[in-house]
Image (tube, one colour):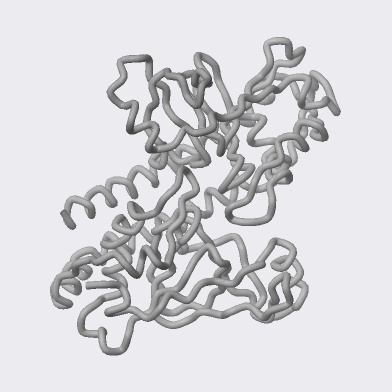
Length: 375
């Protein structure tokens, strides 16, 4: 069947819901509701918006409610979350799916959101921050079992789903703690008010390094490098690329030293620590590293934790924003504590990070099980 055989047209979220518009709405003093976008999960959120909010263009926001499915159209395109009793807002990176009255005996919305999610994720295009058009959704056909079969499968998954929802909320709490701006009373400093450009350098990406390019070079016996992009999660990496000539230039690689991946497009300003390895990147990201000539000893994990807000400050305000590398390196100044004190902070954060990884491992196993079941 086709999408519009059983569903209404997707209601897209509001355009021009910038951070400024969201912050302005918080001054209204009335009810706040969740604001979702192109993120992977729409279970919990740190962003809320006033019910009387207006977009940057002065248009009142759309308030969604009732039974339906939130689907990400940009960013983590294809990701879906079932909603049954919640009021919320969406920006234009997401849409809301509702069922036609005539199809209530054909589709269980919660079943659809679980078992068709990978179908739409694979349909999305792009590297890292992916996109999914309404035309793609409306055109592609899909198959569903009888409603009674859908209901029986959901019933058998009920306990697991409840536990996974609890884990998702717990993970969100851990991430919220990690994302908080921190204030630490360091005892010793190597230097204060230091231009970051004196100790940190960067490698830009390879233009033309696409998934198609990777596929075409898979059979090469040359040394391979892990391809990084604007995706900061391990399960959304792009694969490996052999050393080659790309657009008339030798592939730029990052080899044998620690680095900090920072997204230039998509989730702009977000970072991921890179252990020593063999990496290359497309032009949606940069890799930062400590200069050999740096007079200061710096742990990159500490830098990403302590100066998280400084990285994000140079990102434009949208789910698919861009990161201003020039501005960051021109104006950012940092205080550099003793190396041992840096490591002490990193260890405290590792406890939370390890708990998040443990939750994500369970979620991955569950998703792999669902894929096997649906095949």
